[in-house]
Length: 77
Image 1 (tube, rainbow, N blue to C red):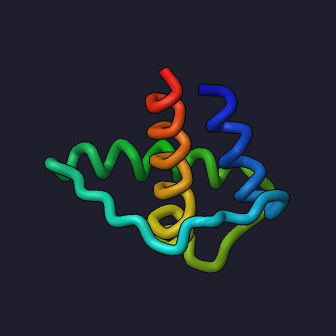
Image 2: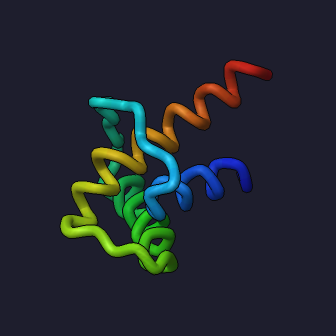
C-alpha cells in the first residue's frame, strides 16, 4: 500500500509523529518476525534520517503504526 509507505517514510523523516503509545503484537513464527523486521529495516535504511536504536524504533513506532494503518484500511472495506 503506497499510502502506508508514504506514512511510514514521513514518520522516519520526522514529518509526522506517531500517536500510538503501546501496541502489543505477537507473531506465531520467528520467520514472520524476521520478514517484518527485514522490511522495516530496509525502509529505515533507505531514508537519510538515522535513529539511535533502530530495533526499538521499528518495534515501538513503525510496527504499531503500520498495524493500525492496515487495520483501519480493512475496517473501511
